[in-house]
Amino acid sequence: MSSKKVERKKVLLMGKSGAGKTSMRSIIFASYVADDVYRLGMTMDIEHAHVRMLGNLVVNLWDCGGQDSFMDSYFMFQKEQIFKGCEVLIYVIDVKSERPEADLQGYRDCLAAIADYSANAKIFVLVHKMDLLLESEKNAIFEVKKKELEEIAHTNRLNVDIAKTSIWDKTLYSAWSKIVTQLIPKKEKFQTELQNLAEQSGANEVLLFEKATMLNICYIKNDANGHKTEDDEDLIAERMEGLSHYLKNFKLICWRKATNFESLEIRTSTFSAIMQIFTDYTCIMLVSFNPDIPMWNWRKAIDRIRPKFQKLDQKNRRAQQY
Ligand SMILES: Nc1nc2c(ncn2[C@@H]2O[C@H](COP(=O)(O)OP(=O)(O)OP(=O)(O)O)[C@@H](O)[C@H]2O)c(=O)[nH]1
Image 1: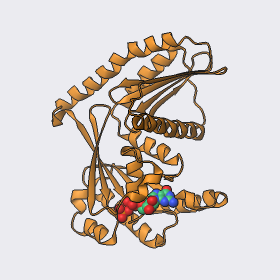
Image 2 (image 1 turned 120 degrees about the vertical axis):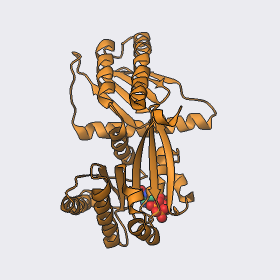
Image 3 (image 1 turned 60 degrees about the horizontal axis):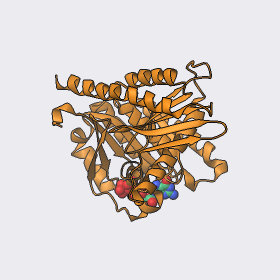
Image 4 (image 1 turned 180 degrees about the horizontal axis):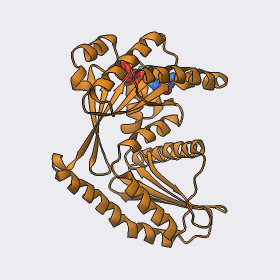
């Protein structure tokens, strides 16, 4: 595929040394498990990772080593090169950092640079290593941190999306799912097609996952009468976190057993679910609270809609050539 057909999006991953940037990148994009990340070394300068998603989207992830000497150099000599043309900035803060003031200063510098060079970039702040806090203090400490981070953003006239994360639980998937969804072009079209599929197939839920990361990128829910419904956002996020986490682990187990994941069908006394590789870059899942729903019908419905998704992708690619 020629490079002009591809839409490249620059994503900056920044934060002080030891905040956990490379660990999370390795878990989300390189299929590491949390137990493996201790093997990772310090990031020297900037590491570039190119991740292809949904056929025509390539995420250029710049993992910027956070040692003081590198950070100084970014702001003194490489500011334009790093911050120009950036679609998303992710700033990672270690919630138990021994140098919280230095972390905040790094954050201030990043926001000022992004305001100068990519004012429209979407900004995510991950308050990371939440597992190091006691369960009873997590929410209170997070809220204080969040307020402080928002105030700094507002002084730069920027909005930030702040989430708490840890590599030791599922929160990482939820935060990254939001980040990746932000990058997908024309996602409303996916949404419309999947809503049609839900209505035609009688599924209560239709979910689309990016295949490499198993991050959820689209979620449709219909009630028993086939009407679109909306659940509490936190509840949905919690379920998606769980699903992404378990599906990714299941995929890893398949790899270790030298077999490829193709499809999965579950029928219990209260629900039915089917999960299939959908296109080259996605997996699809249908769920019904009717345990007797005929699976063959769903398989057919998925096969019918698949070419549309491939076409959508080709349309996107053609549009980008002109
Ligand atoms: N407890 C805990 N430790 C974490 C978490 N995420 C990362 N770590 C640990 O934090 C340390 C530093 O992680 P890295 O991912 O190398 O940090 P970095 O931000 O990439 O650091 P630089 O490469 O120097 O910029 C490692 O020992 C990780 O195992 C987390 O969620 N919880």
